[in-house]
Length: 508
Ligand SMILES: *[C@@H]1O[C@H](CO)[C@@H](O)[C@H](O)[C@H]1NC(C)=O
Image: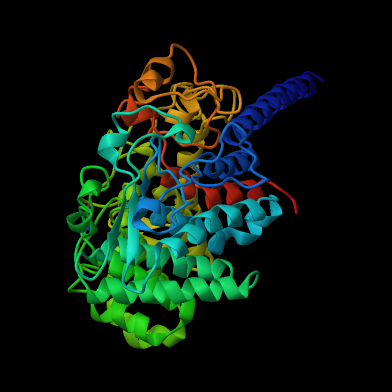
């Protein structure tokens, strides 16, 4: 009797412990799945491209605080340069980052088309790409002439005006045979080649046209070599091509190979791999300037196809550099790794650090999908990683962006309940043109917009700001442009990743 009682007691005790274990694991799982609305992040991110539009806005424009602007761009030079995107919080159309943005949006759609479509956002993604490629077609007026920039950063930066009011110089600048720009020609060729893949089935004639321009631009960039900021001096200091043009030429060659299946382009990427730094540059950042990591990643993914066997020696060298980048992000290299903030954010530098976070999140996600599909793992100095480990880290970066961070703030504007209020952005910081039609001058804008106390009147939804410093601290002030300015390429790279994360959380 006594023995049975004791047993009963132990059993009850055990059941109690079991209940506790069950509850604890329930909460642990709950907190692990702290769930973000990735579909909302995706929708907002595509909305952002409408805020950055230049030119005549269409009837279905959803961001209604914006209106037509830059309607005489190119007029002085006798060329129609109406359209395209403003890159950030200013009103200049810088060609190099605009092209990179379109390449990355297109790559996102190529990798995650189905997921974007299931989230109901494919049309918006295609519109965002086409707004850029329509402009590139206009800007490419002759096989060897490309209009690289409209407006200039120096005069623009003395002015704080809504794009609708612009009184700053709208001088347009070009590259041609005598003043070459292989980097901008290469990046625009890459953008148009990638976009031609996106539109291949839906608008075949447009896809064809893009490919035609891409091939011409590549030929122009390759034949007439030079850095675009030597030809278009006004780009210097704003978007200086620090890494030169060799990365863009390889990058363009590779995208053209993907778009055409023409062996000639692949041979170019193989033959110039060494001379152009494709297999010698090991680098831990990927951006509008430095394309090596993206190039190396795409080249390594060719290895699993039988028809590329004859190039496997060079492709493996590309792969080893791609792995160096990925392992550095994952902190699995013996020597060089990317720094992380105490809150876990990849940290490259203080000015617009988020651009490197979003490109890393995209490359890691894409490569983990590739490894998964080809049943491979990632070999780093400090161990072997499963595709799921890589993706988990990429997700942690996206979740940090959306609010899982020490300030509890979403760095994607307009997402969640706490996000930057004083984004460094001319249009967003001044009453919209629709509400206040009166002209607002250059310096007047500084008084009523830039120096405004309190939040911007217009929410720049979907903009990803520069983000916090090395200690996860963020100062939400308009003059703090290193942290509160957003750029189109920051958001472009996240579109596909948001779609994938949303799709994973759904039962379709
Ligand atoms: C990295 O370091 C480990 C020891 O920590 C060593 O075994 C390994 O050989 C090193 N790898 C390289 C590539 O240097």
